[in-house]
Amino acid sequence: MTPKTEIEIRRMEKDGKGKSMTMLVNHAVRSLVGDVPRLRTGAVFLAVAGLGIFVSACNKSQATTAAPVPEVEVAAIETRDVPVYSEWVATLDGYVNAEIRPQVSGYIIRQDYKEGSLVRKGQVLFEIDPRPFQATLDRAKGDLAQAQAQLGKATLDVERDTPLAEGKAIAKSQLDNEIQAKLGAQAAVESGKAAVEQAALNLEWTKVTSLVDGIAGIAQVQIGNLVGANSILTSVSQVEPIRLFSRLANMNISSHKARAIPFPASTLSVSSEPRSN
Image 1 (cartoon, one colour):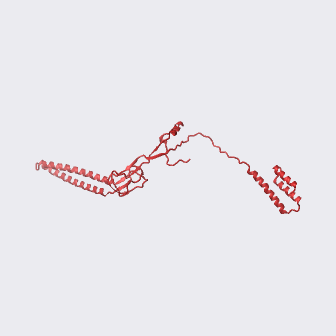
Image 2: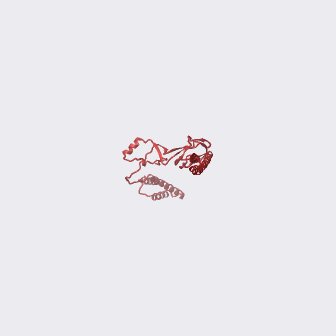
Image 3: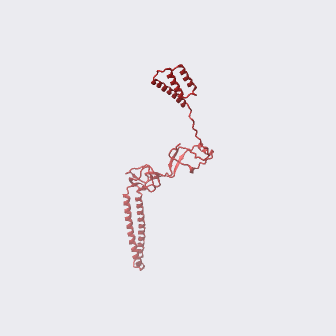
C-alpha cells in the first residue's frame, strides 16, 4: 500500500461520512493492483477480506452504543373502596368444649372414633361392657312380671269376696285386707316398670356418645380401663362457630377510627393461613 493510499483511507475513516463501504473497497483494490501489478489474486483477496472485517467491526461497535428506547407503562387513576387488612396473633378455642364422661361404671371395650376427627351429635365414641347391665335389665323384667302376677291374684280375690262381704258371708275385714293387697300389688307393678326403664337406660348408656358436633380430642382412657361417672374419656370442641382470643393493638384500632372506617365484629374474617402478598 502506497503512502497516498494509506492517507486516503485514514481520512475516510476519520470523516465517517461521504464514502460508502463499496467505494472504499474498490479504491483499495485499484491502488494495490496499480502499484504492485505482480501481486497474485490470493493476496488481493486476503487484503479485501481483512478490510471488510475491519469495516464490519466498526459498524457493529457503533450499533451497540445506541441507547434503547425506554418503555413506559401508563395506568388510569380511579377512586374506589378497597378492603383494609390487619394481622394479629390470636388463639382459637372451641365455642363449646364438652367433656365426655360415662354415666355408668364399667370396663372400656371399644373406641369408636379417630382422635382429631369431626364427630356428630349422638355419634358413639366409646363402648362399656354391657353384659352386667343386660343382666340387670333381665332381672328387672322378671320382677315386673312377678308383681303383675300378684296384682292379678289380688284383683281376683277382691272381685270374688266383694259380693260375699255384702251378703255377710265373710267378715268385712277380710275384704278390706284383700283390697289393700291389691293396692300393694299395683304399687309393686309400677315399681317394677320403673326398674325396667332404669335398667334399659343404663344399658343404653354403655354406649358413650358425643353431646355436640365438633372435633374429638385425644382419648384419656384405653381399652380395658375401669371408668366411672367421674372419669373424663375425651372432649369434643365445637368449631362452628369458633371463639378467637387476641390482644388488639391500641394503635391499630386508633388508626381505623382516624380513617373513619367501620370495624364491626360481624365483619371480622378469620383465616388459619397467612394472606398472600
